[in-house]
Image 1 (cartoon, rainbow, N blue to C red):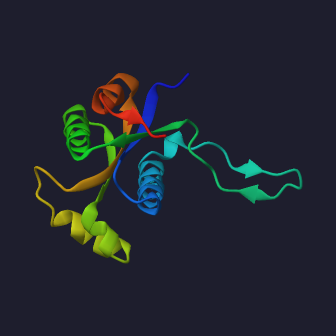
Image 2: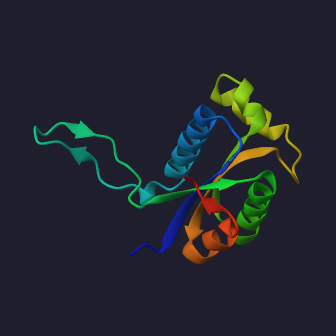
Length: 135
């Protein structure tokens, strides 16, 4: 039904609030980078409008640090749309500080705690290989 796939990988040993926070931020990153993936606005029975949502499912995976780095590297190699969240971002308070925290990470191995990927199904499947669906 869809030519693309969206996956979020979140480090499995984070606190629940951190997992939810990271997942929300990463999903918003994919939505911002892929406006063509957005569905139409929602209307309730009274005609009130609500925000558009991504028009396809998002699979959420639990991953360890090595799986996150492998997914990130595969995403780079295959040109996937990526949204990233690094550990240092938990101690920031706004978007500019988040970007600065990410820019300070080692370019070849950022301390990822979450990553979202969007692209052709086979490429996203390759990037998420070995990760298990979050339960």
